[in-house]
Length: 337
Image (cartoon, rainbow, N blue to C red):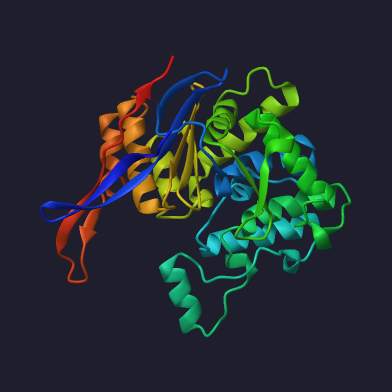
């Protein structure tokens, strides 16, 4: 099936750009409920996989052994923007596990948070691995590595026991055969997992309602989702879409974006998972369609949708701060079954 137009970008009277992609809406029992484009489109899960990657840290005892707080657990699931409270939390995690944060191999980039990046520049300081948007995920990985006495020097390698554990969790939560998962290298150096968006949605449905997964897995899912919802600012930062979305609907949903136009949402009470993939990799197209789907399916109230207007209908603004058009979601969901 071909990708469908999910979002249009206008300039004056014309539609100047169109973002095409795919959507899969799945319940916790695996039933495909709604779709757009190809609900079995295969792509990399990117950072939307982080909540699943955090599960073994809880289930295998590392979180309790080191006294990991809910805020720290939320940071394990994060693509944060490098604000001071993010970097302090990473340092606190390493103090708890008795390791040096220089073990982090996630790479270095400037903080995504503009004020923080400017403050570093004015202070004459260089960004460090602490500012990497993936330093939280890598901190979680090294927490488990330390707990299980694995070699921290090679934790990025696919054949490292940590990455093999994570691969098992990806396969189990998504219901997708382990041997069929495509493996690439993510932006932060760790293995990244390719599979159908249907299975990504199934994993988020199971995160939201982990019934039947066994007591230990159910508890791990509950702790991860509750941590993210209680501390959404850890997940993306003060102004991030993940943060704003979970703040708009507190306790109702868990949400995590990924690079290259991927976004996943789990609806807690309904046990529903939603995945959006924009084929051009654009977050400009991705975020509006996420809000639109949640609105159309009734998972956000009119008031909650209104609070997300900046993400739902972003304005097309030029360098003179003049409105030239808008970004508008036009997704047409098809009911399945």
